[in-house]
Length: 289
Image (cartoon, rainbow, N blue to C red; front, side, top):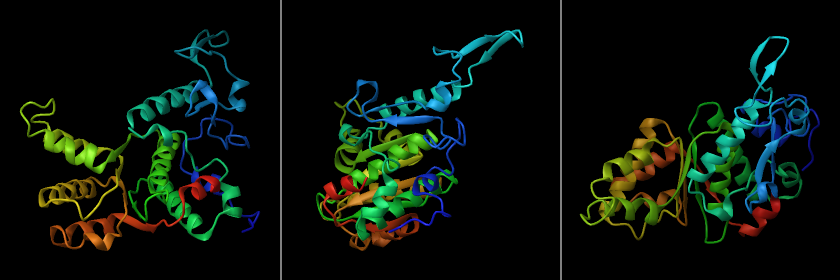
């Protein structure tokens, strides 16, 4: 697939609603002011740094990123301070996200245009839907994704990429939740008087309902009890009411859930999410990026 040079690149489309903290004409960061280094910070997951368009005008390299301006005769913020604060915010949000370490540092923007030329049709369709979800979040919308397919197809990988991009571009809170470990088991533990979570069920449900962007990973229809099905519906319904972005991964398509909660789960998911059938090996998704 060849690009029409008159059209914006995929990367610029992805970043259209992100705050510009650097030189808007910079071809390295596209005006974001920050860049991701996969080897940065001595971390396996990489780190962010100032783009060179801002490095050249740094006046105060240490917190609180302020310096004395002789002409104004007062303390003023360094031109690069907003970008440095953005990097600090990204680090904090990433640490709080519960995104599995193997998926931290995975971003769509790296090599996306090459993927557009080399990726297979199903991978490109999945990536295009992911981009639309990310950009719509930047517009204040919350139309999520329901990603289904066989084990090893890259569902969790793609869902975590979307969360990483929301942190990178918008610095908003996100949360990754494994359905049994982080949702069902935690809520059930709140009924146990010997658990540290005793009596915290409502708080956990409210946290899951209110977080701006949530991934519920590995949702299955066959193993859930009636109580669990109702709990999942309540969380999804609350997120619908809050207008929050929700991403679901499952081995089963949306229609598989029509027999539980009188079809209400299926109805809500169809209102809230684009359905993606991902049926490629995860290594192909990784290669495309």
